[in-house]
Length: 138
Image (cartoon, rainbow, N blue to C red; front, side, top):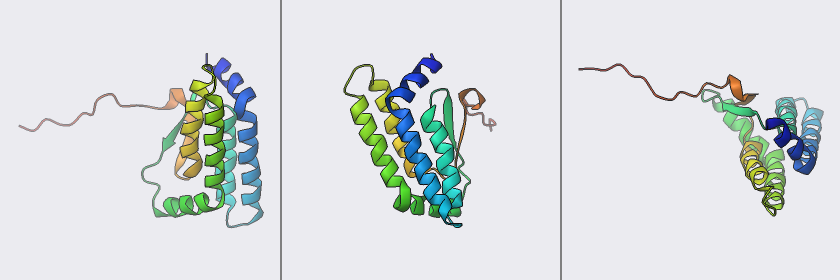
């Protein structure tokens, strides 16, 4: 099922969204200072090309450099990519078949704004705790 979703996503919106990320990555790599933005953009290009079956893991301990980098990313490239994702989401939601893809595009719009401090992993590699275990104090 993931493969079918990914192929449909690739045909409907994935290829041109990934192209936008690749262009942003190339522009970011022109300057030495913004090479980390280019690396993040290329990583997100792969995720925008083939998103189903993968998840984004947020590093809560990324720290202040990640926050400052995300603010700079938003100003330089992030808002344009987020607008593209929102536009794609609206266009995909026109049909009933495209609704899940539109929702995925809206989720990617948030990631397009703040990519630093995140990592894309396979969905099977993510451990989601069901219950938090705490020692019982009596």
